[in-house]
Amino acid sequence: MKTRFIFLLFAFVLFSLQEAGAQHHNFVSRYINKLLNDTTDASKPQFLLYPTLAYSPETNLEFGLSSLYVYYAKNDTTNRLSEINGFTFFTLENQYGLLFDHSLYSDKSRWFFLGKLRFQSFPMLYHGIGPDSPAEHLALVEATQIQVKERVLRQIRPNLYMGPQIDYQRMASVDFIAPTDTYVAEPAGSKGSANTGLGLGIIYDNRHNVLNVRDGLFSELALIRYDRLWNSDFKFTSILSDNRIYRPIGRSNVLAAQLIGQFSVGNAPFNQLALLGGESIMRGYYTGRFRDKNQLAAQVEYRFLPLPLSFSSRIGASVFASTGTVFSDFSHLNVKNLKVAGGGGLRYLLFPKKDIYTRADIAFTNEGTGFYILIGEAF
Image 1 (cartoon, rainbow, N blue to C red):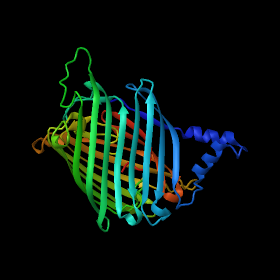
Image 2: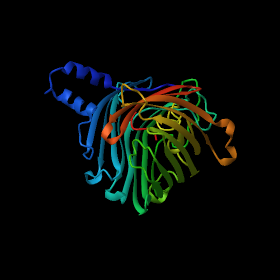
Image 3: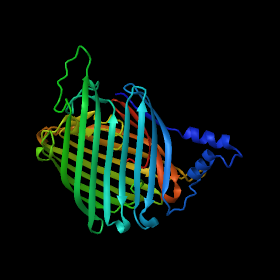
Image 4: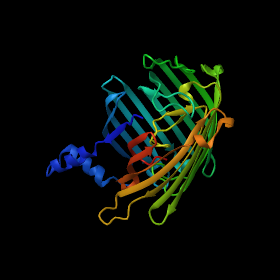
């Protein structure tokens, strides 16, 4: 497995603080002081912008810029915390991308907008389809990808939301690059496709802070249909079940658990199959290391927010473990195909007034390790 490292440049931040010294009017030092000391009023929006650096054999060096915007509707802290995450990058191999995620709540949580935007020219490793796909990737897939997904949900009862969703995914200029002496059977969608899905989602959500849930429940059931009637190249149905529970332990610790199922009926292209791995669930496995029509995965995490340390109230930690598998149909679901991963990490309380941590996690699998530095918990 090729491990991809992402480094949040807080070393630069700390260095700048030291260099600033008495230069209190320096813009950088004022920004850093505002960030680290969280001088913004708790009810006011906050915006964070920071550089990232990454490396992988497929991309060479990757330079990026990440952003986070959080706010309460009408500046009312009794409302739920809304967040918009952004990330843009380019690499020395002329690859680039623009990614946005958002979870937005209206006043009194009457409306809930949940969605994502992806536009990127970025390589992916294709290991094949199924739980027995080889550890060494079969091909490097280069393509331009676009995804626009949006869910517009209305509260119909306290904490219960329902509404339509739309998902548009396009993969173009696809090139499967395999070793010259290896034949790779190219999967459905290997020449590219454009698919539009329309569906309905129902969500129970009583979380107050989606970036760091200390007590709550989130449960989503969504069905989305991709059909030629609305200009999809492929015809299939996708069903998602995502269930998360969070329970406080003592004064500051949290026990969190998640169970996710993703199921496809019909002929889905390879890029829209269920993908196991990534920065959220089954950490330590490359995103899409295993892929198939269906997926079941679960994880549990214990968070110390913060650690009971005398020298700092902003340092936390976590330990986590996960298991999951992919399968073509339920007759091929086998406990012997379960993959396992686990690890731990440190937390830093970035915005104390909004209870938002940045995390640095390391995860281990029998194929290697993964290292992640991101703002907000994995789930």
